[in-house]
Amino acid sequence: MPMLHAKPERQGMHDFKVQNISICGKTFLADTSGALYWPAEKALIIADLHLEKGSSFAASGQLLPPYDTRETLTRLAQAIDRFGAETVIALGDSFHDCGAAQRMEPSDANRLRSMQEACEWIWVTGNHDPEIANWLGGYVVDDLTVEGITLRHEPLGAWTTHEIAGHLHPAARISREGYTLRRPCFIGNGRRLVVPAFGSYTGGLNVLKEAFDPLFGGEAFKVWMMGQEGLYPIATRLLRED
Image 1 (cartoon, rainbow, N blue to C red):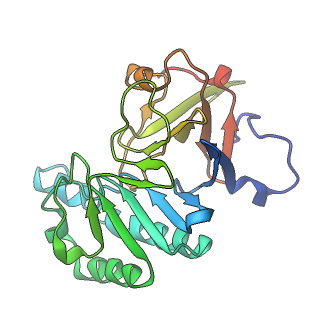
Image 2 (cartoon, rainbow, N blue to C red):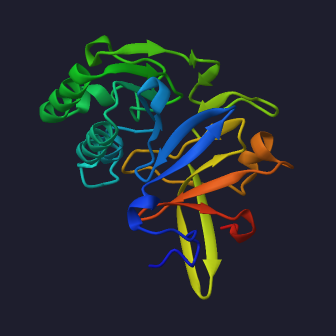
């Protein structure tokens, strides 16, 4: 499906893979995978992996293909390699519940350990994973402040600045010329940023929903929408409610 003529005028498809995003004067690279790279810190920031969501649903009788953890870790490894990240910061809800780590397939757990051997790994706790088992490796924190930017799971209320968060699973919906497209997105206003959910089985909340009002209500914001071929800045006048 085309991006509804939402692409800016550029020369090559490679130009769409990442978008420069400035937060309080600091430069980040938003990636089409849903990851955010901080070049100055050589850090890859991701949120809401929700590992083992499939096995959690299966336990309650809702059958999903049991490959979400493997797919998510594969995409994460690709993003780490693509940017050459030396640090990974996971902004909460990395695991779908507190028992998720125990349900991981040994091959997936081994892959996670292998990835951690190459990077400093920081788990920020979330509402789904307020506790993270020690054997998973890495450092566990409630939030983290680096160079004046606070990284946390759930964004704070109005007027907050210098913040990168997840939790809300932002998504954008646009309709033009008979086409409708709804995809995860980044949303920010130059002072704060909410990143999309990275997990394979995660849904999205429309950025026009009232949950975003305390963060951006009444103020200008920008949206960068994930597509199959790249990441695209979308004019807010094109956004539509569900």
